[in-house]
Image 1 (cartoon, one colour):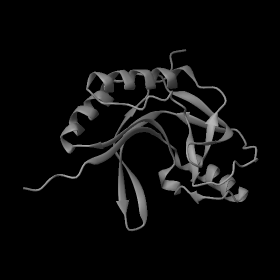
Image 2 (cartoon, helix red, strand yellow):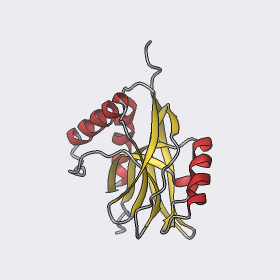
Image 3 (tube, helix red, strand yellow):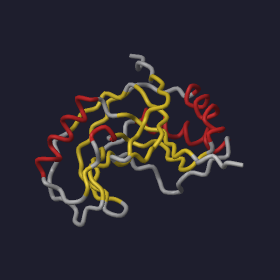
Image 4 (tube, one colour):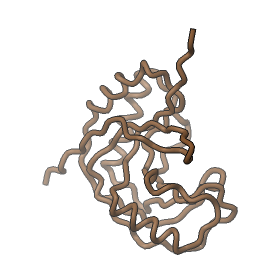
Length: 176
């Protein structure tokens, strides 16, 4: 009998290509220590689910399709080192639609029996891992028009970790 390997899953906001290019260009000019995150992997995690059986995929996709939040502008304008040497861009202010999306997602995940991290949600985009010191650089304000979120799979490949989007859902245009 073969045991199916768990899938490392997470919900996230995928960085648009133009934003990835701007962030990586700035990051690379700063000469941060640590291991830079691959440009294709830049994202903002909404909920990390860890190893999950493939049988849970359909339920997670159904949950994602039921979430409703307005599209919003996110301003990544501060640099912070979090956890064990993760150099990250963070917003100085969290837009209400981002908080609402995360609250809905976490509530839905809890109803479906997923155990989530007990730490408060800290929106961030990781730039490098294993950084020894906190960079003293002041980032420019990176403006991100957030229009969708997705469910991602973290895969180990011969070229390192790769994040693959399994499904995505649009955010609604704000009523105005």
